[in-house]
Length: 145
Image (cartoon, rainbow, N blue to C red; front, side):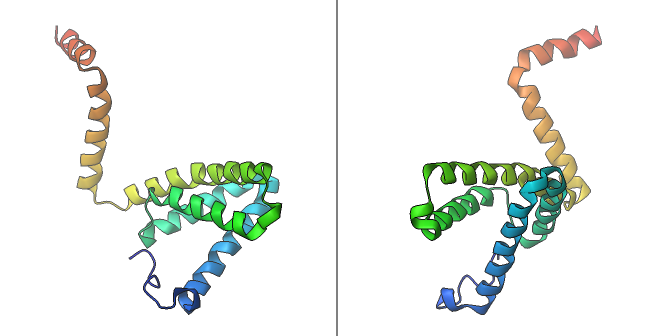
């Protein structure tokens, strides 16, 4: 289960949620501070994504988290939430996700048994071949003859 505390009631009073929420907002604070030196921030985000591979996080969670972040900031900033601030945060979240999502995918792939890695690699590479079966079929036979 992604969040062990999701069934705690009332959820907003859950000690586990509060601990996790502080971890997340502290990570966001570190990320915001890291915007001063984005090249140094990248390995931090990669490490964060890699660690999350062990917590049942999936790539499809990134849009959900991004939407929650933007909505939370909009509510929290109230009148300070302008179109420019929104655009800036959407851009920053896009950068965060662009770094973390591939790192998460790699970490999830690396955890797989070798036979599953082989199966996925063959299936993904064949999907590329299928985009132009005729040309690839002709190329195949030209190698034979």
